[in-house]
Amino acid sequence: MPDDPERGASEAARAFVAREREVRAARAAEDAVARDTAERMERERAAEYDNRPVAWIGIAVALLLVIAGWFLINRLIDQNRLEDCVMAHRHDCAGVPEPR
Image: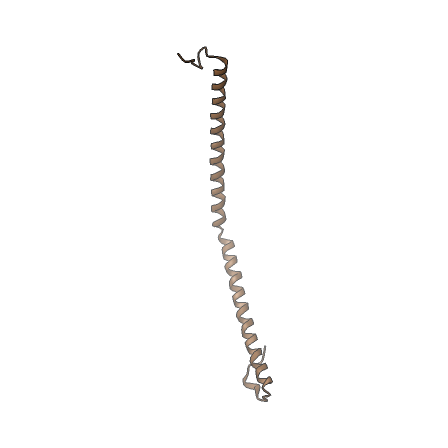
């Protein structure tokens, strides 16, 4: 007949049962902490992805860069046309837009 750890069991059996209970309690606590941490991290990740003002600021900056690039390219094209006309020793470069 095996020893019942709850009734008159040996000291080693009682210590084993006590350690098993501690391990189960510690495991349950660790699982709860891990679940809470995972849920918190998921909420933080969702909040980071749902940051609309930052997205709109990024779009505005990109749009400003495109507009500035467009003006710069047009200015460089006009400058190139004028330089080509002058380098060809032409005297009637009036039809070529002058740089602004």
